[in-house]
Length: 143
Image (cartoon, rainbow, N blue to C red; front, top):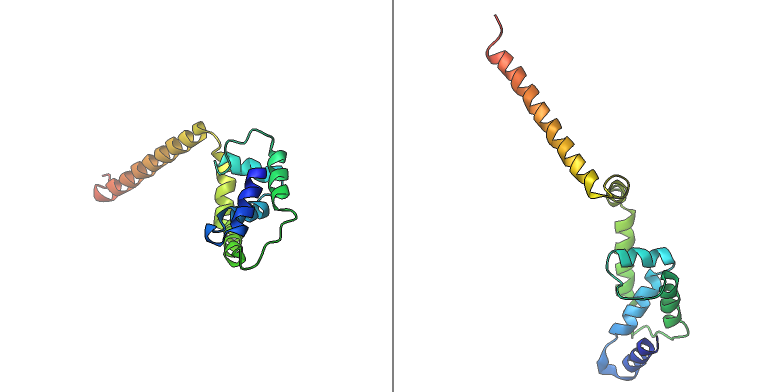
């Protein structure tokens, strides 16, 4: 934590250094609220290589951003708010919620995906067979 705080202090002291670490810390502080948030981020390889528990990561980012005075001109809050609005809009859209539920509940392992593909192919072939049978009976009606 001290390395991050030192880098954030360096960014505040040196105007040409930018504000990348401070913005990252503020973003992660707003993004991570519970240990479940950390689990999702680690499962998607956004946070990697941390040896502690998920609760330690929450404490880390909450401790990193406490007692720091963020200057409005130093952190682009408008950009962070825009990212959070886009993220919230994405998460609340019905299409993405349905897809996430479908993947979580029905396609959580590769066998389920293979079974779905095989079933879809067999059903498609059966529909094609039925269509050809109907068309054949119209073209060559039985005597």
